[in-house]
Image 1 (cartoon, rainbow, N blue to C red):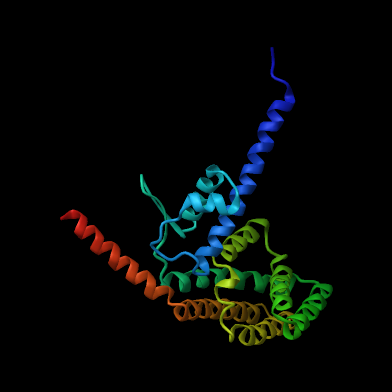
Image 2 (tube, rainbow, N blue to C red):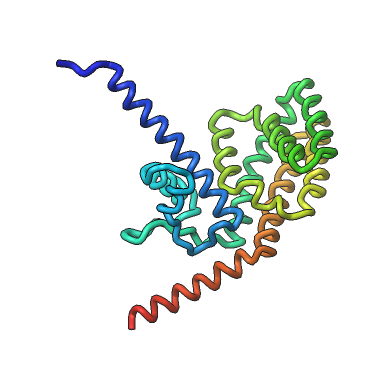
Length: 244
């Protein structure tokens, strides 16, 4: 006797829901890592994550695999998942790549954006320049969304991956970020309005590279790198002790 069709549909639906849960868990862990909630070298307590988010271990395991692919987590057989040893160079390189792809997209946008799109960017930049922190964060997202809308689906996916791998909150702790970002957005907007692809590319690359520097500075103030080095030294000492 054949299985009812709805049984298969239910199974597929459960898989989709589990995948969505894994995305939520990955987002939660990514934010913890990239804002210093858990430090390089620390073991991710999957039991604690399960209790905090009220989810089973399955989406947590899927989430740490995703984060391992992003380079934020290292998986150790029989030991679990650990926060990767992220360095200032890692952050700088990430933003250089992010800036290169965003710059290419901005160059295309200087040609492809409609006059209505440019008018929308002017309005968004006004909100970004005068709003409170929440409004500025929303406007920042909207500003880049309009520019990135000209990119191919594949490029938009890559930009999204690069963006979420190092969230803006990574450097929004820096009080200087918004002042610099306002000037950067103005330079990008001026280049787009002038229909100047080279200027748009350069302004966008500069903006993202400056974001990387701000991220590194913010984490330095938090003692992120110092703690990571201390943990690494302690782990080495522990290993030597265990070997004896």
